[in-house]
Length: 135
Length: 107
Image 1: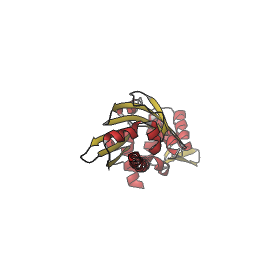
Image 2 (image 1 turned 90 degrees about the vertical axis):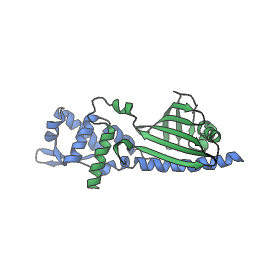
Image 3 (image 1 turned 30 degrees about the vertical axis):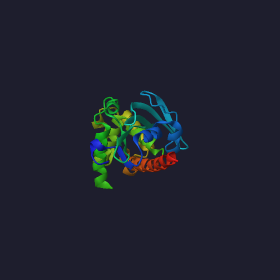
Image 4 (image 1 turned 135 degrees about the horizontal axis):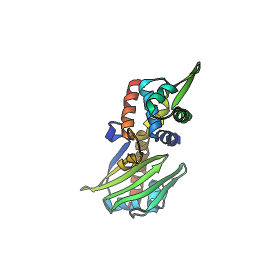
């Protein structure tokens, strides 16, 4: 939690010595997805609803965007927190730069809290200040 | 990933309840009366919100005479503050598994 606009955002990036097409298969084919992430009934179709299942519970998801070998985005709802996971694949000379960003609470979801005087991000910003003073 | 997130996010998702909690964080201990005066909702409604906050461990009550004083329990927020750190750890681990899988796919 650095600043209010960055709140609840996780980015993990890695250079992989493999072509985007191969990584895309690992990101989109259920029998491969379960080898590194979780069991799922994923399909690379916009609006497709699916879930990831693990021994600790399930994650409810819906596909938001599919751009083969380049970008994949889906919602990720678990433990009462709605977030969006976006994968970006960028071809490099020797392989692929793979980037995963998970952001909590998209703007339209924040607006769904009708009558909110301050949204979540403001809340977290204030919380950050309070914690900085007291912890 | 503990289930504590679930309770915390649900409890704080209500804007009125979140505002009450924020006030306790900023201004320290308050009575129900003082909280009601500035909340724009009735005292029973404030009491109900305080009860839910208390169940989630976010506030503590202290009785003094006929008054009940409420204070914020910032430690209860720890799982929420840790969310990004936990998810980063989760994804780093998954990236490791993904790399291992990509190597296996070569064979």
